[in-house]
Image (cartoon, rainbow, N blue to C red):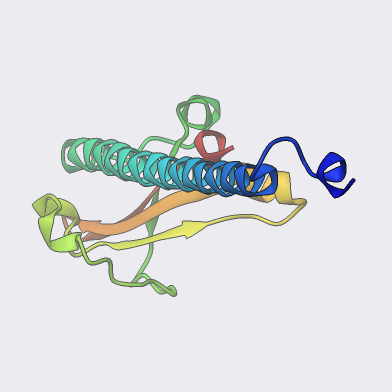
Length: 152
């Protein structure tokens, strides 16, 4: 009588636990790949954004050596750039960047940082500006490049 109540497939519970272990290992491996790819995409995007910002700022500084800064207006806002002259020494809470010595000569001693304006989180993210303050021909200039739209 006891033979009829036994499981007809020997080791049925063992097979289920092996498949569960294999499926969970595959699941966590795929999650790890997904997270590492997202981190890699963020790093590549950050490097591309840094190179883009430095190229735009360096182009603006090359123009400043030959011309006066343009009057800020609608056209400057559409381009996402803002250039203004600063009277006196530049004061601000700026950190030194580790890659500054590899940048072009005109910007290697510049003050770099980010600025954002208040409002809601979306408005603050949209208003993030990459700011470089540098001396050109004895005058201090502040070049701001809006990067909030790119980040958003």
